[in-house]
Length: 275
Image (cartoon, rainbow, N blue to C red; front, side, top):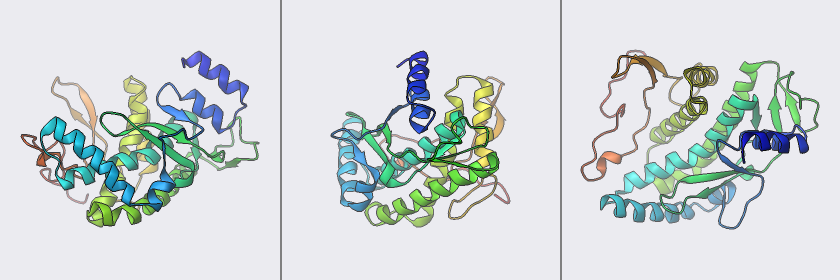
């Protein structure tokens, strides 16, 4: 759906959350229903053994690509991919619409890609959202108005944390990763999603707006998240300034044959004093 058609469709459904999803649909497949084969987040968390099935599909793909599928690698990939769903839905709508939907597991679903089994499509099933006083949909019954952007950022942070806490509780026994690792990954997923929502705009100004969103949402350390925003400007290889961040979690890709540690891996990068 091109952007012009998205805006026309959004006007037809009124300025509720469905309209917001249509307006950003060119950036991410977003649905309002759960077709056959899609996974409801709440169903997955209620039956943690399904994470083993997901890791099994991932292991098949990794063995095809790398001739190996270490347990810690599959556990970390699934950890990161799952957390991307609530983090990215929240970041995308905050960045483009200045709205925060419910991020409850009951109101989110996703579809795994056929090849590399990562979340490729997402569904937002609820209607409620928080917004600013100037939002054109602020008078709708499903809208909750907050005073300013800082308050809206706090809503996003709280809703994401609530979803992540339920995931950590469900996934910890299956993933067999430490609590600090789980929350470090949750921190990375949130900041990366806020940054990426800006980078998708394709301009330095759009990326800078995503960085500003990350600084707004993660202006301090909010335990059990492990860090405030670490995005900063550095000199790139071509001499231009570019944004980078300090990763909090390890993806364990280095356990795959002939794969080195990723740039910024916390295993090899010293933390700055006071960070």
